[in-house]
Image 1 (cartoon, one colour):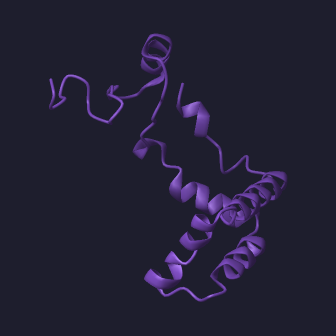
Image 2 (cartoon, rainbow, N blue to C red):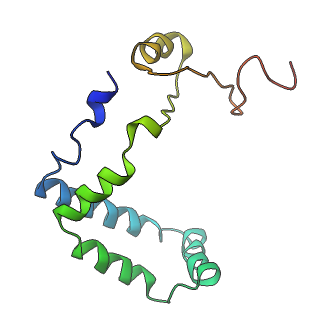
Length: 123
């Protein structure tokens, strides 16, 4: 059942999870600078949102200052399962029955362009 996926998530979040999350976010941020295009994208927050030239360092400092309680608070606020939409990508024949088994609501099938099946403009 889907509820088992997130029930108690914030309660069960541990100091080890905090460390793992920090490391994943840091590694992800490092990948943001692997190409010239990605480096240029890092200027977007500076140009469009008025962030300082050191916004990346500020974000990392904020990340390291967060404690277990902060992570739990964020999880409680944003992991609201009743408002989530799950997107499952795969072969219809192998995925659909499993999705229907755990889905709490309607299952909407989409084509490769994101259009609901049966409602495509090209028929």
